[in-house]
Length: 625
Image (cartoon, rainbow, N blue to C red; front, side, top):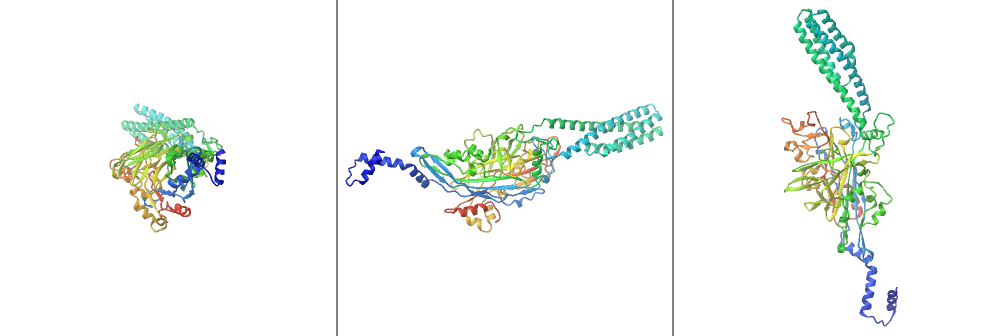
């Protein structure tokens, strides 16, 4: 306070006498008092504070001509201005800089998602979900199996009596036994088999016709004293009856096992296990399949663009603060917490409320509540990576994977996948055409879209790209089909680092925008963009990495979801390729495929107004304007 008073007096004194020491001391006090604001202005002038929107490129999904494959594109792009702040130093030596920030998001919606597949519904927490009608059929078939088994055992007794009579050459006893067989078949067995809908019943019904024909032939042989002929016919009938008894016994055993297994399945804490209709399946789970029957949201993608801002004197950089752990926290966890904005003010880098409070996406994502219920596994080869959701105890299952590519030739990458040791850093970057790309983190999560009645299994992914002195945080989530349906899998595939294409407002407004973007992409697959492909696994499809296509002698792709295996079979064309288990019970694998390396389009240019950025940002992703 004394120094300030002296300064004021000196300012009004006509003949001041000021020593050099006094002048330096006075200047120091003034400098310290105004340094905080000065540093902020200096930082704003010397660091990059501007950013422009970027978005995943939708591409032209009509190129996917595989039969039976549905293509789901993205909805309209939501563009937001999401400024950030970077702070450094402390006390009077602190500085704070406001930064531009932009986000784009889009959702993937499907129509009649359930009806697009023949696969039976299931979930990782409940078997045979949504099949109450089928359960009633199973119960009815089980009763028919039990009754038919009892009758078949009776028929076996008639055959054995007939064989004994034939061996004794007794026509009367033979006739009694064989007529008893025919009566039990036509009066008792066939009506029971006719009301049964199982494959086992159909087989036994077909066998019953042949057995009766043989019994009648045996009766004719007895009448003409052809005892050896009658004995041979009865032995054939006996073998068929014994086989049918075994089939019915196995069917009953399988039914009982399925019931005991279902009784032990755990309903997780995040599912309300109320079952008002008493069918043994939680009401929330049934509601989820009803939701998927309509026009469900099955995925979303996002891009957040922030400048490569750095404070003078190594006081801090925005990129150092936005670690993978922090990005995961921004997109998964409790939503709209009252403390989210307050917490950002205490950090060296503060992001916009829409990001901090997890409000960019329409779905609520939860990673922590899902741990232990689902894992992710990867198949890697030269030229490709495939990540799939798997049971937590499956071979190669991890809670989280980092997926990247190591360049082995100028045009070919070796796919890599590993469990990250820490989420404090992104890992080694891949640089291609001036774009730096980090590994992509993939993990299971629960996604609850705004109109969805309960959480659905999903795969969440996120990465960071550097382009035009800006950091692009890109990612999204996609429904985990393997946790919802039998013999199906969601495949997140990649064959190289994400391509980032620079475009100007003039490019976007001009004709042929999609063709322009396509010409600037180096990989043919990139032209499919961020579309989602659903249907039977089409190994000839161009949206799969070349290494996985059978016509290129791709390596075997093991999804590790149970025993689902993709393999090339001798003498089979690529279009006939199937997926199944090692025991030979083959069934076409249903897949939901999307690209982890989907290209990103980034608006560039100097002195662009916010109005221009808003308008251009909304059109960035579209292949056709």
